Image (tube, rainbow, N blue to C red; front, side, top):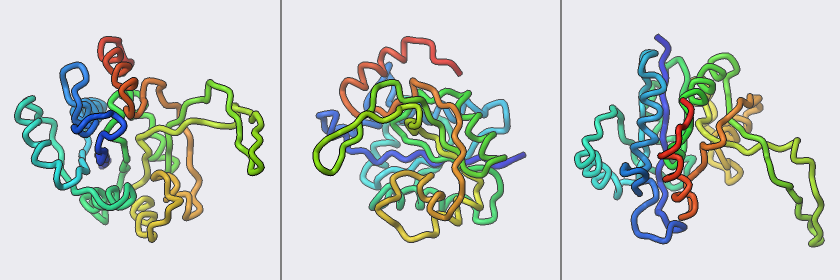
Length: 232
């Protein structure tokens, strides 16, 4: 059986939500966002040998997470790693729980993207097995303008751009190699770390509902999605 891992990163403080509760713990459809995210990955491979789930949380949020799991009788198996100074360091702490001699595929996913479809998850893992490094994307549907240094702007061809989602998936040895690099501010996501070594990133189709919950308006949309049928 091929090894599958996912590192789910949840370090948000919820500031743009306007409340004290970090956004990954806010309820959507009666269940904390983060539980919905973990459940998605568990269910995606429930009939295919399962997946190892690693949840990365700030140390000061881990007790609250355990309390939520008890309250909601949440039993999806997972390990917890402690978050770092940046996303790069948080992912590295999660990756440390993946064996150094491990084969297979590891994914990295935002904890506040609870509506990634099972189809997209499986597509990313299947493609990474063949291509090495994979990112799910969706087309840009609005007009895009580029800001110029002198203060002007111009319209660019949106067909040449894609919006990046997660999970970003990689062969384990490749991602281990990439994460041994020193941190750089230009590492804006996990694929950029791998790309910095000169590896090609493969793009696959994502799903439009796979939004990152950031604002109160996003939470309203999330409540709608909980009542709608999201394709698995």
